[in-house]
Length: 93
Image (tube, rainbow, N blue to C red):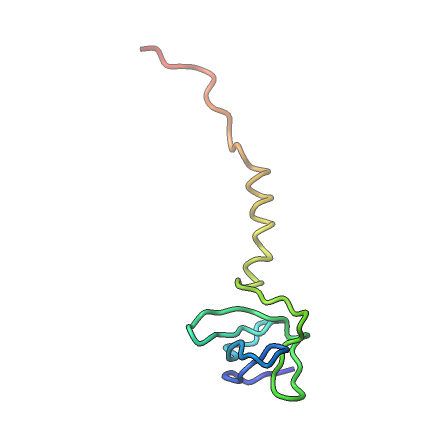
């Protein structure tokens, strides 16, 4: 589904969530009236009576493309720490 930028998106109760800023993969990037961005899954957006988000939709406050890589970064940090052992000698004074 291709959704035009600027369209208003409402929750299941009819409250305005924001306007479409972009369609990014399987999420819609919305921007609210204060300029804050958040993401909703495209699969849970219904376009039959205006754009409405299913009541069970998870609204993300961070970019899902960025969040998906965080687990990989944490794992890499754990595997590489400590990077090396401290020297086995102490300099004389």
